[in-house]
Length: 373
Image (cartoon, rainbow, N blue to C red; front, side, top):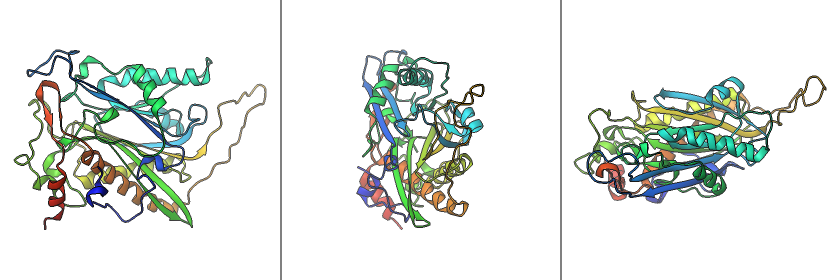
């Protein structure tokens, strides 16, 4: 179930075929979802490692040859209480050189190491290096996060499962244990297509949504969170030390428009406007980090050897006319907003660690809240 299945249409631009990030040619997505009840579900403070497990891994593959042929990318930080590895090299070089993986906060290291091994497996041994991109949001309210249940094998499986076409949403992959605006959240995706200078360009977005306070939730400008308050659908229990709105959101924006790195950064920045339209404020303990990349320019493998005068000292690239950037901004904002809504509409009620329950956003209540004057 998705927002459009409920009659909720965000923005004015048409969607791609699947209304997903995979509508950008060559982009693939894979999930591995980990669900185990274990023996630690009862009581307020189950032992680490005893479960329940409510987590996973999601990977976004920009194109099949990403290990050998980087693409241009850029990034933006709305609030930095979070982690996305590899960003310094992206800021320095403007290049994305790996798939993008999403998981929980305490599994970033093992997922990063697995991506390094995947690169070595693809390219063989050599004197190259890898700075893969791995992002996180915190699922410790529902998941036994300190049990470290995500392994390198799960990353390998997610990469092997990565496919084009429709993308599973809600309680899947890295989004399995996530909470959004105090409803059950998780993975969401959407896309938009528009013509600039007579040519069609696609923008696709994937989010791992785990942020926000209930009363601030807006959908298409309607105060849904006020109309479906905690007296109607309870909010998850949380310790007093964990501020409401804490969590994070990761947004991955892909496009086939030919963008240079600074244009990718400008596109990624606009995802924050969608988060704001939904009611997010970049709360103190929310890590709101956005990455944008373009598949239009594929850079050649590093093969320059100055001593032997080999390699390619010059590379021809394409660039979108600056006056068309506003069009991409509009597409990014619309797709990000719809992806966040999809993450909640697709999600199902989940009970996890210590009996904490994150309730799904009831579809009938959502429709009624959208229809209210």
